[in-house]
Image (cartoon, rainbow, N blue to C red):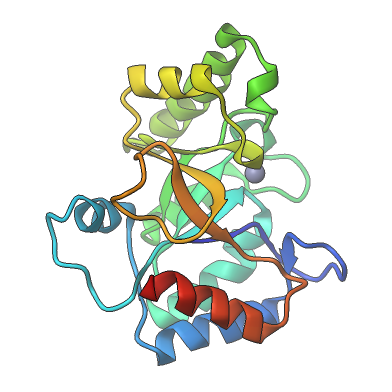
Length: 217
Ligand SMILES: [Zn+2]
């Protein structure tokens, strides 16, 4: 599972990947027969209900940057790759972030849209009530806007505590993604799945090494 944030030009920013590098990474995945999956396909693979395709990969985008629709979507469409957006609903319609029409466009293009809270807080610093509000209000709004279930989650900053886990369990979230380094697998608890956070400052060869190590382990 690869985790992206912003695809744009901002030298020195770890979370902003240059579009040319993103093109190169997607070309690499296509050339080496990786299979980007929808969340439903991911769920089938991870529960072993479906045989795993060649080099399965889930492409996730966190926060909800406008360039996910303006830059990343056309690049992914050239390869027919689906992706998953973990959006912080309180950032929607603010400068630099996606609008609801853009999110609907991503959804129509085959992206899965799910919750990354409302305001992107450090969840462990919040009360149980505040955590619940952040997690459930975002999910409810996404489900109302798109008319589709949004029962997976990505932790802002990768941070969670026992309260977070209990809220997600009670609300029947199926999967939650951390920023623990590595490939998600059925060996990990479903609410503590690993991802590879793509660091824009690392050389291309390091990214290739991360991806190939993760898929063969
Ligand atoms: Zn985030």
